[in-house]
Length: 301
Ligand code: ATP
Image (cartoon, rainbow, N blue to C red; front, side):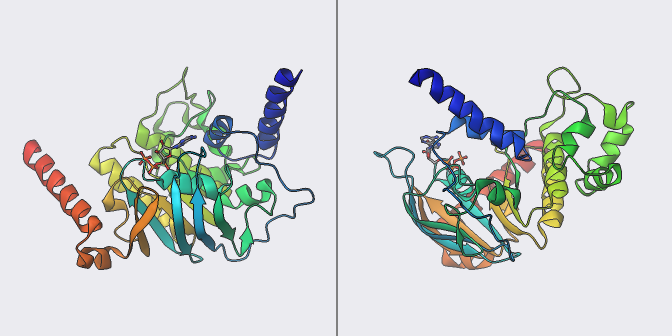
């Protein structure tokens, strides 16, 4: 009976999450990956959103007891600021966004939004104020319109068009023979990585969250698309509290603060300029990436 109950209980949780309209299918997939242990405390209040300050307070975290993933991670993203996290693969960057969403609970310290520990408020109220542009956007086998409106099902047609415009995908959609009614996904039109990411950006715009998490795609987009997406993100992120999980340093140059992570610790922090002056890991990463870029340019000439 227990074997039957656990999956049913888990499905119940997924269903509740869908019902509470998490504005992104990726989140639901992520939820399916994780243990269904995270529960609201009885009578947990809703998050009282003020200006959207995010604080990681001496956070320690392990997915499994034998391996520590984050150690004493301490930083604040002030309302409206953009903080970017860089570091090698596996350093723990994406784990930060999972903890902010409370897909997992911290092992030490706390994650606070406007001074409220995320463990003490309802998950639904927490996730409602955070928009995510995931690395790899999963689209429904449905129309572009449906996929866009998923960000906020009650949005009007003109709001959807405006969001598509801001995400620089509107002209593309309107050039298709069936426009917003074009079917996408497995059985429909295949969109490129950049186009899918713009759909995700439009969804996030429609949701209009106070806090935005941008998990940059690891798969390389061509330089022109990458620049266009970066530009869009800059526009959207303006006056939002933004956490960027960056895989390319070109994304982080304008961040208010850059955190360099190595094996679960923040080893350097500061603005791009400050970090270059420090002559540490960030500067090495920057020089390496510049050299790679130059080599690519030489190869294409
Ligand atoms: P990348 O740049 O490749 O996306 P990252 O810095 O974002 O990497 P994380 O995804 O935060 O890294 O992962 C940090 C570490 O945690 C990795 O070693 C990873 O193997 C481990 N990890 C991630 N998810 C889980 C999980 N669900 N269970 C156990 N270990 C995990």
